[in-house]
Length: 462
Ligand SMILES: Cc1cc2nc3c(=O)[nH]c(=O)nc-3n(C[C@H](O)[C@H](O)[C@H](O)COP(=O)(O)OP(=O)(O)OC[C@H]3O[C@@H](n4cnc5c(N)ncnc54)[C@H](O)[C@@H]3O)c2cc1C
Image (cartoon, rainbow, N blue to C red; front, side):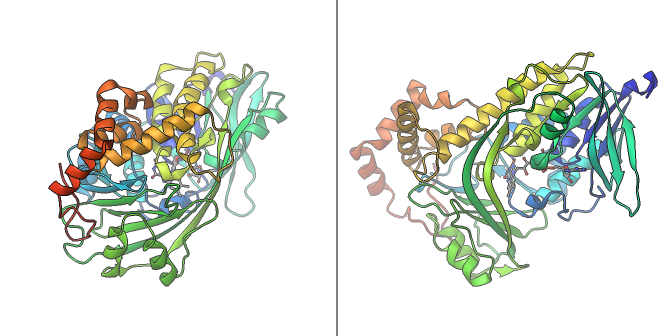
């Protein structure tokens, strides 16, 4: 390898994290090569390397802001291709903690698009950059070191009889997702491997596409019935770009949705929010349900290492896989890619980026962990403040059934726009307490006799 190679970044993995890293690195590198084991073509279909793309993928508001910043006009482009764009609280039927949120304007966008369509649109924008190219149908077999520095990656074409090839690079970025082999590669090179934090959640998904009866959703775009300790089965339905809808059911701790059509419908009928099941009763299925198993969340603590090779970065699910129920993964990947801008490679190990990645992943991890540990069967240490905050959030969710401000405050936190402490602001606490008072509850019931959970009528609106 020669010094002429120093202007090239090599990104391992061409999914969301890899493409966003390539976008950011194209600002400072003369050439960015993205390697993936799949052919990364223009097709909208789910691909083998990202089996999760058959399932509902919500883009949180914070991630949407980063994507729109990296790709100005992305939302308009998605919308022109059929995606529906609305408001996360006004146009969405939400049920958290078993409480149906009152609908009203949140100012947070709901982007209704399938994961393949979102990924393909992002990829199209990245590959339009003159400095970025893709090396598809190549497996990454390892990284190459010279002393304490990574100077490239070893890749093998997927065609029969292909020999390993060395791909030199000034910076190598691991974005190979939850199957990342980086901890093993680091140890083999004499560097410490990161400690791994795990949380066993036993989540199972099953998803299916449907054609809806006209008007079945009213003016709404999305239905979400989130799993909670009292009703551990959850599900979501979203319109997608082709005018049909994608339905994902989910269960925790091994109570997984079945993939036979009758079992799928029976599971849907057991959610806290009955709308989804009622809508499906008159909808036409377009394919068979497909399953996905997610046994545990895992966070590789690269942020805790003091020795790490120069010329190497890691981001996305390769660092931290988060319980998909909370829809945080793409947003965390986007924030970590954006952070690469603030930590340009200067010949020294990118410890600053590792630490920042730890802070970004850690904030999402803490939120997801807190919600996961509200399920008593999920193993993990619970502190008294955890339990107290969990009870307060339950009260706030109950209050959001009547008060749009509470729903908005809750969604701003779960969308990673505000920190969890925002829920403890005096104005929010006062509203939560007021909404929880028996007088407020009986007044709300008396003033809205028609506010029942019916599919056709939509939900109470503020
Ligand atoms: C069921 C499910 C539902 C989810 N729902 C949401 C959601 O609603 N919202 C949200 O934001 N996130 C969601 N996520 C998380 C989201 O999918 C990921 O966080 C996101 O895709 C970013 O991941 P990534 O790019 O780091 O890795 P991945 O998307 O896993 O991509 C890894 C890439 O690396 C390639 N690759 C891997 N190994 C090699 C190798 N050795 N050689 C060459 N190529 C390789 C793969 O082909 C793939 O393209 C969900 C995840 C799951 C499992």
